[in-house]
Length: 163
Image (cartoon, rainbow, N blue to C red):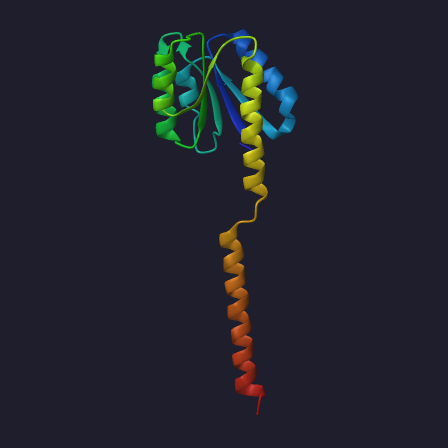
């Protein structure tokens, strides 16, 4: 996976939805996002790692429970943000998804693609800020090294050249 690029996994047993989401996100984000699609939760789990930033996960996968897949994703990488998609408007399902670590729960409808895009756009903004923000630990280390080097130079000067 490419550094400084958001890695997005889309998991749904509806091939037309996978194609639609991948095409839309590719047009919207271009090279700022790597999109990988899976038609099963099991195949997605085989590829989840610490470089997986976002997963769009269907709640009702054929032969699989999206909530179980969500739990396993969060076990593998607790920092992966999971957006659950469902035809199920039952609040109990949404609450359970949030309990298991979902970032969002969206009902599949005509506005869901726009909502997903907004969520990924927010994540992309945070990701770019984190990548471009100076690392304070590195700055502190450089300051310390500069200070230590200056102290050595002054000590050498005072010892050998002052007289």
